[in-house]
Length: 499
Image 1 (cartoon, rainbow, N blue to C red):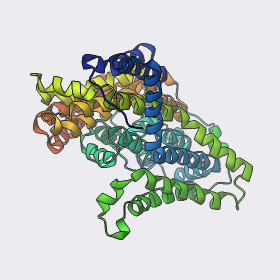
Image 2: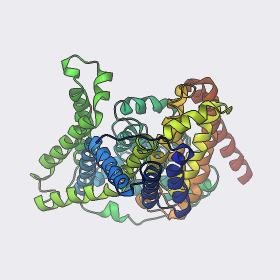
Image 3: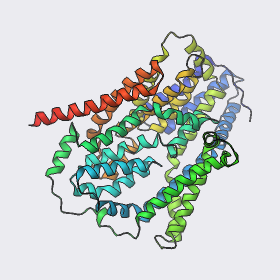
Image 4: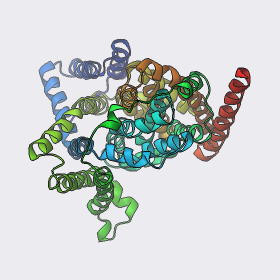
């Protein structure tokens, strides 16, 4: 259906403002986004011919068109979560934990291995949290690593790695929000500007390798040292027919076939360059990869009777059911963005406002990082936050003066969204990290907050630098030096104080 845009002036910014305000007040994303869409529909109706029913029909046509435009992504996410559910059910995670436990002999190696496993499982943050926790908890318990430390490592290698991994549910979600044509390439361009993700991963490995903790985490680690536990965890004692290959092979097949699928769909084997090929229709290629992972699990599990055919199908249904809530957020945010862009002219109004403003756009990445962090912390969702902010940011940066800041601004949006989600006690990722580590939830929030906030402060400095220099390399180097230096100083001060 053809959508006819009308200019509605300052009213055009009301739908996203309403959605954001309601989300912050109610801490509930679904109804907030829906009411934002409804407000846009009413504005379109009363600014046009006054026909509410026609505007409602056009709004639902918009929603339908967005689902159609992103159908491959919906298929990919459904297949991905089906594979995730099957891999967890197979027992491969438990088998890997036992294999790794025989090779890890001290705290440093166990913490480092936990961090590495968290980085390697980059397909989805929920899968990451539960898998890493299930696999590594018996090992870290035996070596007296606190549950709080385990929960932090899990949480810090879940969303931060997923938001910069090209083959992940997060990548396609972000790409779909940015643009229908070149969203995936834009997502790849934001990776060097996603300072919070990059610095969080650096901090995890520095803390794991050096053992230099500070704040409440140091106290938790000291308590874990003095705790002697002779009981095996339920996870470690559990029997399983699964082997390490049952965890590794389906995921490896999924990743390799996803990359090959993106190249195939984009015409790489017909002479198109690889970078152009993977950006042509990435979600179609990712769907092929996820389907290949599903077939691999079928061939690997059923003949060995790891699960019955009925259990296999039930796992698939359960996995697909788990993706429905975040998928609903995506559909609503796509629709809100479509209403703002294609019906009520939000982009036109914002472009005119920015062009006539005296505010230096160099501060834009810093301001966006802070706003995204506050929103995500309050709502407990990074997907809902960047789903609301990305359409607004792209509209601002569509102006001639703001075009050069599109990528840094999007990077700041994603970084702030992940930081707020990382700290929020109502975030599903924070809850899953506590669950995976079998740690008291509030203890995980308390011990993680100083670590995450330190990284955020360093990143905020980086966004001030990049806003005026427009190059990520200098900012990343300064951030890394600052972060490592502060970690060493804080850990040394706390150790000296205790002595």
